Structure formats: structure tokens, C-alpha cells
Amino acid sequence: MRFVTSGKSIRSSAIIAALLSLSPGAAWAQDKPYVMKVTTATINDGPHQLIKDFAAAVERDSGGRIKSEVYPASQLGSVPRQIEGVQFGSIEAAAMPPEFIVGVDERFEVMAAPGLVDSFEHGQRIAADPDVQELMFGLGAAKGLHGVGLILSQPSSIVSKAPIRRLSDFRGKKIRIFASQFQTVALDRLGSTPVAMTLGDVLPALQQGTIDGAVAGIGPFVHLHFSDAAKYVTETNQPAIFIMLEVSQKWYNSLPQDLQEIIDRDGAKVSVAMNPVALAMYAEQRKAWVDGGGELISLLRDEQSAMMATLASVGAAVAMAKPAVREAYQIVLDAAQRTRQASSR
Image (cartoon, rainbow, N blue to C red; front, top):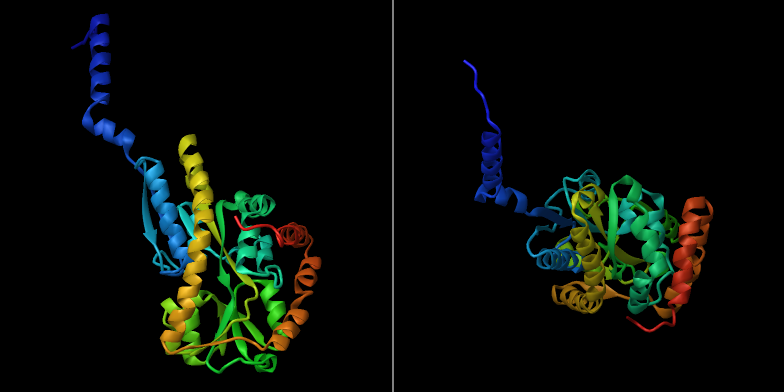
């Protein structure tokens, strides 16, 4: 049996196919939103607020074409797993200190140089500097990361089981640091043993006595209940803790150009909008630590000055040993000097 198809039948079939393509099911397939999972390691603090604001802005400004899901407190895995997820596209975006991304590119650690930042407001100006943003946003481009935001979260503090009131109290203590050679050399100079570990491992390590203290911001100490294991927080204020907002380059490349522009624009907007929020959170978290029975310790003025003198050359010493890091460090150092007396944005 042989079927003969006339020209008229072909035209009719084409019309039917076109009508079917406009059916509700096909239209839904064309309009199906992109999903953006955004994660961070902490909760109820600056990084968490940053990803919430970013997620809300992107969903709003895309008109719902991007649907956002927010996962704080390492719900999508530890920080190394988050980085891998963003690189390979299983996680669309993540916020974290740039030092945690040194396995992707060692230049990410330059923001952790001690003495770089004089004050909260100064750190915010550095984060907003165009040269710094151009450097930091582009570092992971060849390895799956697309930077869209940079903020100062808060200054560093050290939580400890025994109080650190003087420089001599640093000696012999095992202190957790971020994965940064700048922090390693700094703690070495203070007589401590630096131990790099992710945030999720810190509280158990304190409880078990594996470490004596840990460098982080006051926010995680409060919201992750570190006071159950350690009551003392010494506010060294060095180094400043910056947070990068990284988007999966693989996912970003899959978006239409207008959505890519929304991602970039909203990353920049929410970063600037976080400045007063981060300041307010820092004040609230310091108060919460004391209200919860913890103690805040500041080094005496001469001890703080002596510490800064000890750490003053750490940045240059670390950078000089690594040509690529030296160039990146100089860009950030120049921005720090340029923005020292600039007005806050």
C-alpha cells in the first residue's frame, strides 16, 4: 500500500504543527523558568543576607523567569563542595570569603592581607573600587566562576576557650584560620600554630580540644552558638573579612543576554545596598555575644599597635614570594591607599 501526500496536505500538516506548538504544554516548556540555587556556609548574618537579597532581586527583575532558592548554613554541602558545585553548574551561585577559593586561583587570597583595611567604612570603599572588582570578579573566569558581588562582611575576631588579652597569649595556641598564606604567616609571627579548616569543622574542633581558638567574624560565633564551647572573643580586627558572590559560569552562559545583564546588575546593586546592613548587623552581633554570656576583648592600645607593627610586612612578604599574587596584591594595596581618605559610598 502506498500513501500519496499532496502539496495541500503538506501545507495542512504544517499549519497543524504550528498550532500544536502554541498549545499550553509547549508554551509552558518555552517559558519554563531558570532555577538559581544560591548558597553560603553561614546563617542570619551578612553572607546570608547578601544571598537572600540577590535571590529576591534577580527573581523580581527577571519577572519570574529566574526562580531563586536560598540555602544557608552549608545546606548544599561544605564550602569546598559549594565551590565545585558552582564550577560545574550543579549550584548556580554561592557567597564565601575569597580565601576559600585559593584552590581555584591563589590570587583570591589577597583580600586577606593584614593591615589592608583601617575601618569598616574603608573596607567598604575598597570592595567598591572598580580596579579591585575587575580583578576579583575575573579571577575564576577560566575555571567556571563568574564574580558579580564583593562586600566587606566584618572584621576578624578570634574566639577562644581561654582569653587572649595580650600578645603573649597567642603563643603556643592552635588557631583555625581561613585557607590563606597571609593568615598563616600572620599567626606564625604571633607565635601561634595556624590550622586551616572549613567553618563546619570549627565548633567540634573547639569542643574536642583539637584547636584552642578560631579566626572568623562575630556573626558565625553568635548564630552557630560557639559560646557553648568558647566564651571569649578577642577583636583583633585583622584581617577584614570580605565576601565574594560567585555565579556558575556554565549556568550564566546558558542564560539569554538580558538575564545575564540582570545577574550582573543585581549582584552590583545588592553589594552596595549591604553596606549599612552589614554595619548594623555587626553592632547587633557584638551585643548578642555579650548578652549570651560571652566576653568581648580588645587588646590594650600599645599591644594592638605592637601587633600591627608585627603584621605590617606580612602582605608584602607573602606577595613577593608569588609573582601572580604580587601583581594582584599591588592592585588591592593601591586601592586601599587611594580610598583611605575617600568618602563612603
